[in-house]
Image (cartoon, rainbow, N blue to C red; front, side):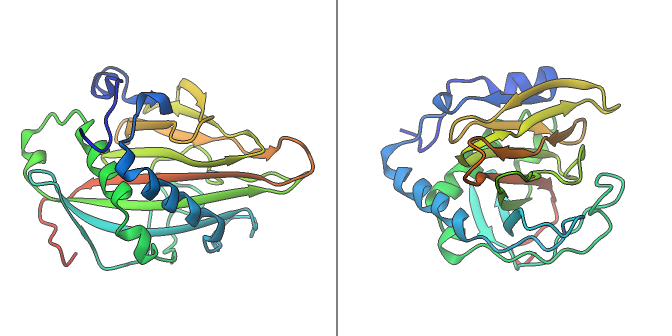
Length: 248
């Protein structure tokens, strides 16, 4: 039995419309990596602050690192940690800024669920160019935790509608407590609205072709108006880099 599988035809969705929204119950996980998934989720309560928010807010926390991935064999190897950068053409708020995020913990970097999920996600992509299966990819891994105190908002995407600058992007819900909002919207290349949905259950996911689509997420607020709202995602950016080596 595969560690992660799906009953949803994700490839077909991405071919037809550029994205796929997948409910958690369509992604059964084998028992042998369930504990690893919980261990990874436990990280979210202690992620370091994101210091690059446009309003100097205290509502977003994150870690970031990169992996070398060779699809033909499934090889995954951690690349040297480096700063994160997006151009202003795809991110009007924090694009053009070299951002220094804390690396993944050693436990997360070696987490078997994380590795299985990266391989699973890649297997869902409709690769038109067969060479893409036999050359290296860089996989950026982001753990992002958003908090909204009672009476305030937490912004999952303070940059608004944007691109990540990859070939494919995948987003998986890792944490959700007392949160309203967080509506995901998908747009075409001309920023015409295509679809909206919310991630309501742990491991609800969406996967998309980042070269042809834009996306954004509305703020979250506290549902009960007393305790803080929390929303955590695990997201991967898949960059095709045929000349990439394990040394980065």
